[in-house]
Image (cartoon, rainbow, N blue to C red; front, side):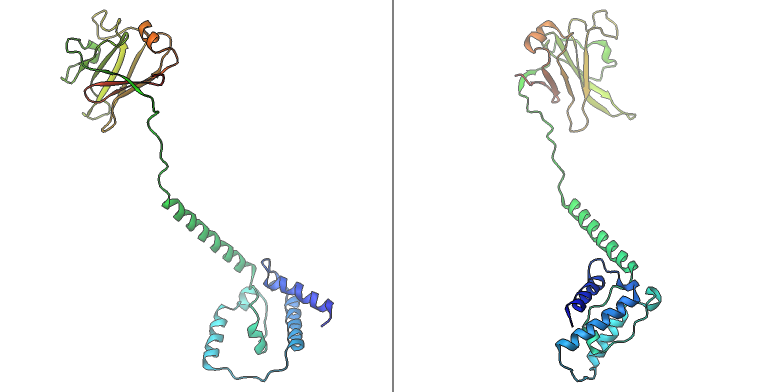
Length: 256
């Protein structure tokens, strides 16, 4: 074989066995490939005597026939070659087989991704901001709970005046059932019950209710309208958090 013929054979093999194989649709190119491959074997190897197939080899040939390209499916007629043809890799049967192969790879990749995602743990989210506790409010037995909280259940508590802020706790319904959850309210101490009505006045009112193991919590940023004494202790812009533990109220501040 001369160099031109070897280059032709290389290009035909790329079309037959490469990742972008397309030779199955070109019967002329298939026939030429077989011709050149036979010629190459004749150049490299001495003639070998024909050896009858053993029963094992015949069985292997039968299994190979099961996976060989289907003539009706691919539209190409292939003639049986000599014994040397059995050593040649099978040509890609059709474009449809390529699509099936690509789809199977996509399914495997998807399953692998799903398995990887399932093995990941939940990404933790830090619930606490790390602000220090600066005070604790304890119940004030002599303080009255304002009428705004409605019918008494016996769980209401009033807390000591905290820089002009009055804190109250109680249990209130938070859904359509009869379940009651602990709630915490912060009001202007100078305005609570000032007119002996069920309402209240003032520049602010903060409230929050708990749920199960989660405590009742009130949090806000100090703004205009808070009592002067409170602003002197916690300047405007300070982040505040009040947490009811079932008995006392913890005070947290990002400015200490």
